[in-house]
Image (cartoon, rainbow, N blue to C red; front, side, top):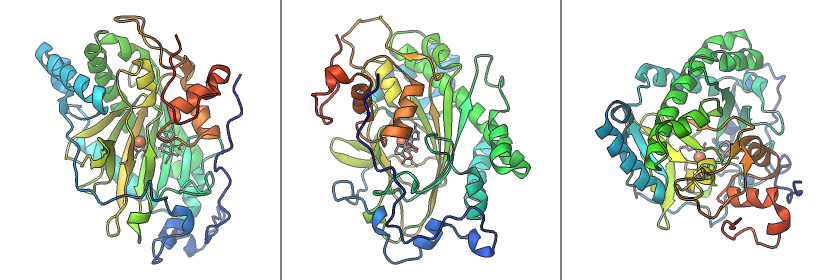
Length: 398
Ligand SMILES: C=C1C[C@]23C[C@H]1CC[C@H]2[C@]1(C)CCC[C@@](C)(C(=O)O)[C@H]1[C@@H]3C(=O)O
Ligand SMILES: O=C(O)CCC(=O)C(=O)O
Ligand SMILES: [Fe+2]
């Protein structure tokens, strides 16, 4: 049975110099959203300030990530050999790499990025039509101010589920369209179609990457591809407005993704994504036509810790706004996350769990951060772990 976890900062912040969030507002003021008003101030409001430990020292360092040609991997043994070696090296150290040859139509990527730009420009009252319901990941959120009281992220987000099935990427082609029309109305059908198509392209790309990951771990092409074929993935559009004090806040705080794999598309040449490697925050800069991929906690558990889910964050800028699209690949909600018994049976680092349980943990009990997976393992299995302080590493289960 799950142990009650220490309550996180889940109350709506009482300290915000609030600009009321009024879903019924209809006058022209509603065209200006909360962050729009805040970013015109000289100083950011206190709830957005991140403590010194998280505040960013200015860094121009860049992470050296391999560029993996997924198309070549799927079409030739030599291409697969090279790709598998590249991902094995990257994933054993920091879990980040870029991919090309993914087959995502540049016009579709452009439409998805432009669609996000258009969405976040809408009046707050319209965006609030898709307001996130408590305890779920889907919907519109402004700075997560409805969930947390401090260390608010300088961003707006729109998230929705992409449950795919095992009859192929085009097998369940309504879920995203249905989300847009039911949350926002029929005027949003076209935007829903754009994201439906984008999610299907991301699904295809992520399953291709799973073939490479399977090969790299000696499990064969089909092992993870089949495992994720009917996944419950999540798509998130991030909008980071300009910020008057970019060095005192963060767009997305330091965290490891709970998902299995994340595919990120960064808009234009505005950088922001940083990864902590060897004690320094390093940019993974946007490159035209390339997607940034990283291993998340669920794949770290699936690979029994061989592949790393690495700490990353997004910084914001004084002069430039930024957009990114994140596709979080996850298994079907009730599928057990457990490493394969072969090729090398090893002591288990994490207990069995399901994606539904991990989602519930991050949406109701714990704000995803650097230690989500350890905290989750302890939450699932309190009797044997409760004496271990939160900061300790993973425990051995057998
Ligand atoms: C399962 C999820 C929780 C978050 C969205 C997806 C994958 C990444 C997680 C998140 C982005 C990690 C940083 C903190 C967080 C609260 C955020 O800043 O948005 C996380 C997401 C969330 O809980 O909404
Ligand atoms: O916007 C970015 O560059 C990264 C966002 C991120 O890490 C996330 O949404 O999980
Ligand atoms: Fe992330």
